[in-house]
Image 1 (spheres, rainbow, N blue to C red):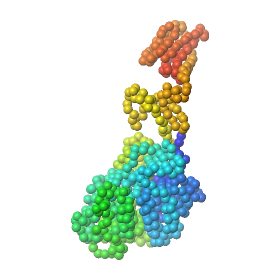
Image 2 (spheres, one colour; image 1 turned 90 degrees about the vertical axis):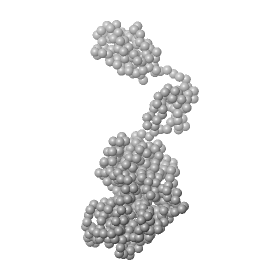
Image 3 (cartoon, rainbow, N blue to C red; image 1 turned 90 degrees about the horizontal axis):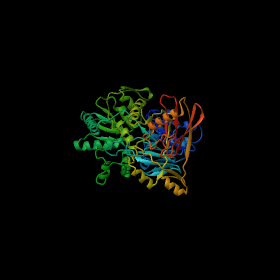
Image 4 (cartoon, rainbow, N blue to C red; image 1 turned 30 degrees about the horizontal axis):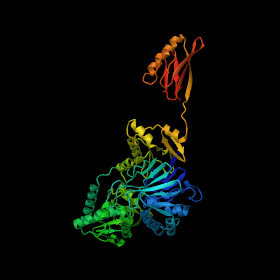
Length: 599
């Protein structure tokens, strides 16, 4: 039986370092190639030695697909393609292709220029890696080779994020990457058609969470920021440069305008300008409201939000600062946090998920003393708030996507094991499909039953419909009776009469004989009488008729003959033609059995 094999090299019962190997129809595909925010050692990148111990990856992989530009999904790409070695095609959407190298270069600068690491990819490697990228358009079917094709669907989450359908023959897999089923202030909701894949591989970051109303969250966020600013405190909001940052900037911009507030709002790094440029360039990827108002007013040109200079962090008085990265694991956000952590007036608002091992994860778990680099201890006195503006689907959203796509099997990645276990049980219970959650390095094999497309003749279809019964329904398959013709690599189902005519054949009738020995001490007449009575009872609803003349005859050509082979034996022979019925019977209380089966 054909099967699909899935092995996570990252994001198996874990969040971060997404890298999923899929084998389907003899093709090997790598889905995402990310880094782990929580590690600075060998665990930072996926273990590519699983694919091959030595040599390049090109001969083992047919293609690589990147779902979006977040580093936990693309951060290991230059390392994989240039340092390990891969020369094949890398597929991603146009916005991802534009933004990915900028974030990779930022990541390289922090790691190499600031932390001084040596065994790392260079700026030139990033450029060489991006030369291998083949851009994808939404809903466009791309033929990777003669057998493998891929198609991208809108995923929400961040600008350019895509879910991907992979097809080889009649087998298919859908990989979601990160997605959001709820539209926000700048992006729409994820969407996919009813493609019924053999396997749906879904993220499960918020597997046990059902988020409250977005309006309530926005109101609480604005209230917390306003209260802190009013009492003279500073608010730090760690974000990633594109995505959630724009969402919250639009929210604060409109609130500051409405309330006529004077406290400054800053956005660290020079990525705001670049972000604006990309949102203008890829305006078709934003939501309907932004597309409609874009000509009159660009929502990404902020009046109240200014560029941040690191010297501003020491300024007295209230301020709000958006700083990257979003998990407080490095960069400007961590530097500002260190300066402001000791003041009770200040507040840090974590608007999204934080990976285990990051400073963000530690303070959200209530840690008040942090061991920083050089064994220095940092006392955390500022207020810590978690408000999920995460652009990931919650449990309700994941279930919604399953209803949309109607997969035959489900596989969860990019989540914590305990939460995955809960969602796995819920999916299996609600949808009656198998759900898997492999750990990193663990292979899951899913046996597929590929459907074979068959054309059906109009005459046969009309004849079947004339017989009545339910109308055709994809969820309730209906059996069709006809003759299957295989010709020129195509299959057609036609009526037997049409098949005979097309193939120039004449109709034949086949008869099958089955001999049954009956052991019985009674007389011939008694034995045949009891057989006659029993057969009449069990066949009373069938079109056959039985006559008591020592033989039975029916409208479908069954007859019973007897011959003496020994004084205590009767040899009864039943003849059935191909139009007859089938039955298995046992004579009551005598130990005599009759078994007749139509072939």
